[in-house]
Length: 410
Image (cartoon, rainbow, N blue to C red):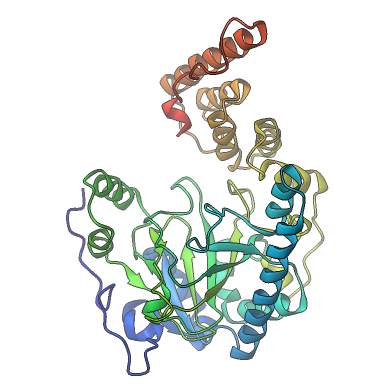
């Protein structure tokens, strides 16, 4: 177990620059590249990304493109929030909200907002600029066929609370996200904190131990060598989804807090569909990295069945849709099937538990054969089935607690 990982030089306690905006290379000397490096030494940058789990690139997107996109985001966000507020309360409002926003934990200004973006001119311009600068690095890790799975803007305002340290995916699957600062990002604006080289079991376990010890957030950042992503407009950082990171808390307006907008774009390897997406429905399954790099045109491969099932499953409130999508992925040998099976299991779907037990029996989709896990899942599935039968017969109250969640579903 890691007791005190060394804090990287210029980490979370680094001091600011003379203009109040600290460039990426002032706080992350070991992880900083200029955009020319990303183009001319893409293999070296990709190797660094593989070992450290993140890297920073200056001038990745032209400032003018970022400013245009920032203005668009502000206007589109205000319009979306008004549209949601004017919609009929209940399911209609929930559906309208989900058409614009993802993972909004609290409906207050203290939470960060994840605003999905349409493929309008301002977005396409920034996206093409980003791929022109970073596409060769990304091609090393996801290939030109890497599929677009997130296209959103992360927005936080003054007084926004910090996020707990976390990773975006488990160690079983990986995707790569590019964050682009649409304005300068200062300490007071709650920058993202990245913990280099923590995309591994050792550091994930260490975080679990620290959380159980109830260490302060600041102490955990220090022990894990957190680096603040303090950027100038147009700077970017690439992150392995398994890396430990968090969004920082914003200061008040009087103390220097300002709206922070980060364009974030995620690509995943073909055959490893992630456990969720942050896309407008009309974009799901339609774009790959090679569609934006100006290179040889990729052959069309849009799959309507895949797209429709991914959209339905991603609503995260229908275990049948999750299972149906997982079954499609399993038939195609896509490793993402396991994540979607688990999601359906956590929703109490007995058939999903049985399918997952079968995967453990046969050692499919990169899962190591484990009869004990398979049996635990089978027993849990039978308990869920028995409860459903009793509910249908009226012999048990819906208020009675469900069977305890199978540990293998976590």
